[in-house]
Length: 289
Image 1 (cartoon, rainbow, N blue to C red):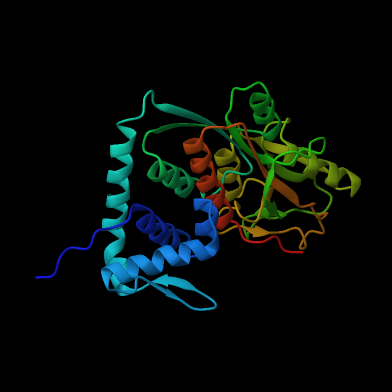
Image 2: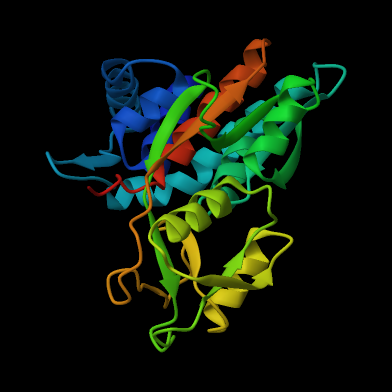
């Protein structure tokens, strides 16, 4: 029988990151290294195991059959390593993260799972609110990091992505000529609401708010139920809804930048934040013109 290969933690971590992001570039970003370094680590791991784990073409990165079989064990290996290291770290660390309600989308569960896998000793507290309130909390030191929409009066923060907006409703939604447009929106302090209603006013489109939600999930539910139309990003619009802006001649909505603010200084927390940013970018389609 041949000897069991000894695994290198960083090489296995590189493999898991490439598998998760399906991209050497995103994996390198999350690990804080270069694409070349990730490739070298992966190649050494494959040589050690005697199997090709990742199949890479100019257009895609995917697991081989051997890579798929190895992935769960690789995750357990990394998690065991992190638990062992975490046992030596006292006190436990706390990470307060704010995510703007109009920014929180389908990538959030993946994002939080990646954070926990990256650092099991990290206690994560997530708060959803509008961008302005979260920025105020961040400036007062009550949040360690915030993912928000760019405010007009601030140019700081790391840009994560551009966000494209539209007027979303169910396919059967009807807006009769001469009647006010039925809107669903977040609280009046929401920037998206302000931009949307200002655009309607400037275009001479009458509107009325028939639903005010205390959170984005409530607004999305109202739209999905056919109660109203809402200004939403293409990424967070509920499945089954469509952009009705062109159908009813509604004004176009300007794109928005999503930015990350952070005050984290310790190495482990900054590494976790880097993984968070990479996961967030991964699930955002590029903005369309």
